[in-house]
Length: 371
Length: 205
Image 1 (cartoon, rainbow over the protein chains, first blue to last red):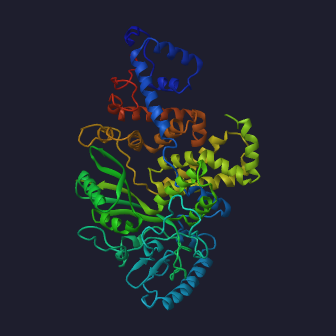
Image 2: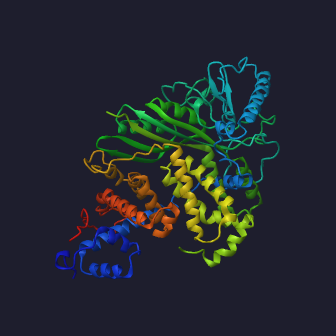
Image 3: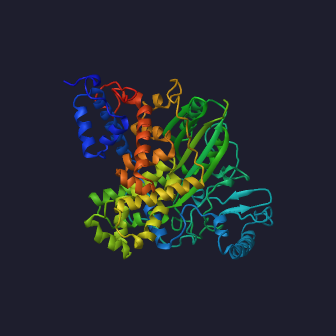
């Protein structure tokens, strides 16, 4: 029968108990604490609580799967020693030891691409005006006199569902032929289209206007050619996964905004994957949410969300999964019709599909200070 | 300081020769761990964590020829991971909230942990970790989540063992306070039995 601490040797300091628990105590201290624990319920309870917390922390390790294509991106970078495939920063590129040369190259590139663009697109602005001196538009962004508009992603032009790989798909319709020469991913469209009163807009409405929220997206990766590949079939179509970060400062109570978002997603075929709330007295509250929305409606949802408050940080990125998609498709074509290998491939295909079909929005809602 | 495991030495030689399969094996072993560490250190932002993970493995690849096996491979990779994440944190103000030490559990309506009780373990601990100052959180993650010893954490963080011990103890105690109500819940998935948690151990019992 264990006794209360008062009848035995003094309880160790909490720090010493922790060191004991971690197995880092010197032998003499370890023995002393162990002996104390034999007779102290309270310290035994503390150690048990430590064990529970430690167990919870261990469960966090590896709890979240890395994105399916992360390894491919790592290996690609190791091969080329390049910057992260998802974020190419023009300002970084234009800085550095050869900044002047790079500026010159960039200027020539803009002129060449701009003139080609104008010839190809009768709706394009007459000249790439509006670009301030020293300001380089990110790749994939059209520059006009009054707006900056991201190029339209290819998946918005494809029929719904066509961009995804059906789990278990075989060699039928295998991707072949031309892939747009640009290896980068595609930024979503820009625009400040007011969300419709009900339901979601048709995809073709997305990104139809300029100077919008997404026009300042951080993604600067290279778009596909302005005129898409000649082949309108599956071949050459890029498989792109989109994700966005958005931090909003909101006026209304956080819970009310959260509920509004959940209601909005229910109508818009999206879902809340994760929510956490932190508040403390005297400090503004915060809610973090991870949302999954149909990729073709990412613009729409971001526009709607942005209207719930004042955007503080925002960014959209895209991951080009085309090569991974092709590899999986080829592997499925080669795999036996049944068995573990096929099951694994089909699971990977399904996961890839989900990444392509559902965009991720990491949303942070901040209570406006003083509310 | 722990040396590299003997069974890893040949593998490391293969890595240093640039053998692709050896690097794939390294990714098999560490990709998930490193990604999850980056995710936690960077405030749960998956895009940042993905970019950081790429940076970490690129740095690992570049630095492998200089790895002399004086530390365990785990520790060495974690040191790179910590450095990359700290650099990213310095460059970018992440929208994570550093909260004051006191009054966190005051009130019940807005109490994150009362809300989190209804959630899953991941959410609860993630929320709690978010409330630790970064220096404490990093040490708790490396020790509690990644399983590094005090000396390995010290090596990864480039700080004395005493600092690790102090930060870990303070951070863990803070976690314990934050999770107190949750831990006392008999329905808590972490709890083994209903119990009452005291507010701390007094020095003189």
